Each structure stands twice: as C-alpha cells, then as structure tokens.
Image (cartoon, rainbow, N blue to C red; front, side, top):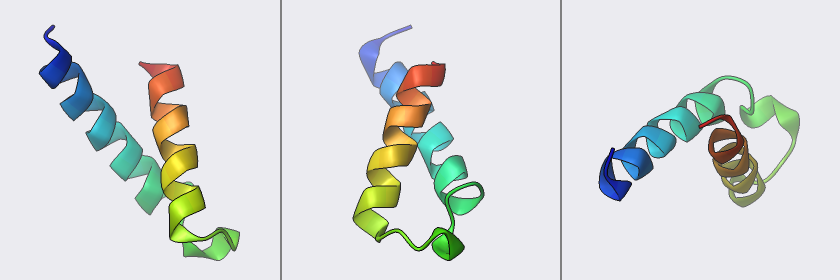
Amino acid sequence: MTRAERRRLLRRKAKELFKTKYNAETGLTRQQRRLICWEMAKGDA
C-alpha cells in the first residue's frame, strides 16, 4: 500500500468517526474533534 492510499484510508476512517462517534453533541470544537478522530484513525490502521 502506498502512502497516498494509506492516507486516503485514514482520512475516510477519520471522517466516519467525525460524523458518528465524535459528533456535535460531544461539546468539543470542530478542531478538537478532527484531531481526536485523526489520532483514533491512525491508531486503528
């Protein structure tokens, strides 16, 4: 898997988390949510 493919996969995963697990109701700012989702996605992959 190339780095580009890996990044695309991570981005899709982070996006899913952003929309579901870490949605607006968590009371975090968009920036914080994005960061958390990105870290979570990186941890999984």
